[in-house]
Image (tube, rainbow, N blue to C red; front, side, top):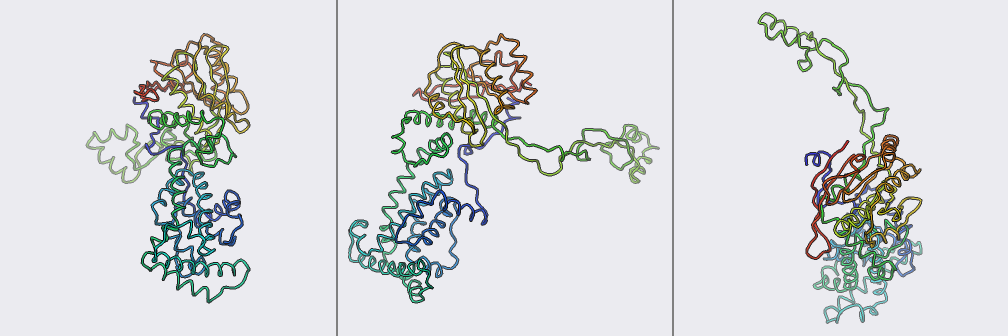
Amino acid sequence: MDSFSNHFYDPSPKDSFLSEKCPLPSSLSFQKTTAYLLENELRSTVAFPGVVPRPLREKIAEIMTLEVLFGQSYEIKDPEKFIGRFGAFYPLYLTLRNSKSWPKIRKIANKSQGAGIACLKILLPLLYETLEKFSKYSEFSGGGLKELNAEMEKLLQEFENILQETFLLWGSFSEGNAFRNSTFQALQEKVPAFMQLEGSQAFLENVLQRLYLRMEGFVSEMEENLELFETLALLFPGRNWSYSVKELKKEPFYVQLKTLKNYSAFFEKNPDLRRIVNFIGRREFDPPADRIRYSPFGKNRIQNVRFSDSINNLLPMEAAKLLNPALKQKFYADMLEGKLLSYQLLGKHYTGPPRIKPRGPMIVLVDTSGSMHGTPQTLAKSAVLAMAKLMLIQQRDMKVILFASTSQHLEIELSSRKKMSKKFLNFLLYTFGGGTDFNTALASGLKSLKEKDFRGADLLFITDGKSEISDELVLARWEEAKKKYNAKVYSLIIGGSGAGGLSQISDYTYIVEMKQDLEGTGGKVKLINCENEK
């Protein structure tokens, strides 16, 4: 197991390549990102006609984007100025930000940018609608609020007055008129006064009750199905998934989606399997040739013999002086004068930070023979699904080759040119069975390695180790292709004791065992051995 610890990247259990988090942007990148979202993803939401003027809708959307999508609290440096511009939105905004739903919404958006955008598409219309319905005075009170007592009636009247002043102010914005000083000053007085009234907080919570219910429903669906939606976004790019389970049930491949969800959950519960996939998919450092220099920082090459005061690289004849009392004084004198004979060591040294080079495409060959039926089938599908997600996230091409007997052969491509996503989902429902022909599988992998889109691809074999390879010519061609295209071969052996015939071409071999759980729907994967063959 020493080799396992030496070359594996061991991520934290909380880390996952399946959930890419939004980096906290600088002010400049935030402005660009927000402008892009308003112009593209949120355009139909913000541009929908309403009582709230378009510039104010955009500004509210900008504030909500900062809060939800980037997890940063909008800093109100001057409350009076903010109230003078946004009026009645100010108390609603503070109430929403302090609600129980708010941390849940931000947590979901932090896990998935797509879910965050979908959340904004639901949240913003509800905010606009709340303001607009109240702008029609008491019309909203009959259906939106719970039964009102005398105290609530008074608060409702006060809030309606604030809204009237707010829309008068916003009307002057939309018409391009100057600020109405009287309205501006009235809002700066009325809004804080309203917020200090007894029961105002409960009133505002009541106003936002419908919004809370809708957002709680959204969060609940996302907590259960987030990985499913993220996978769909990768497999079917450009499709505007609504982040609604009800909508998913209308899809013709809904059965496959439930299966996909199960295999994703299985992968996440098995840390050894996650480590294997993460290592195979890691990125490489690329030290450019123009930044490699011979320098004293490298110590792997003797360049010359020179005088120095260093005792680290002494010639043996100098060290021998320390054994003779007469020459010992000579040794110390030479050291003080820098006249000790020493080796001058040089070596390759990278100047400047290395560039990160994304790894190339991947070819995954899956043994679908009868011996793989059952628990090995579950592990194989989970590993392939995880690898597909990783490759799609990193924008790398991938080909899955399913092989059994000579007549059982299927290729599924997930690349920039061809995305056979429906066939990939069908693979998750496919029941393994039949014989095994590794010679044909090796020939197929070799052929794919020579294709333009897959030159230099790494290859992953997933099998139970019962691989018998009789075609010596194919093996010889594999060795040639690996050297020519600088390809690596990984073998994931399920339940076997070795890689069998694959050991002749494998660079890394992982031997795992899997124990089925009591329900028969999952199990525990354990790494037994990890070998670096070459």
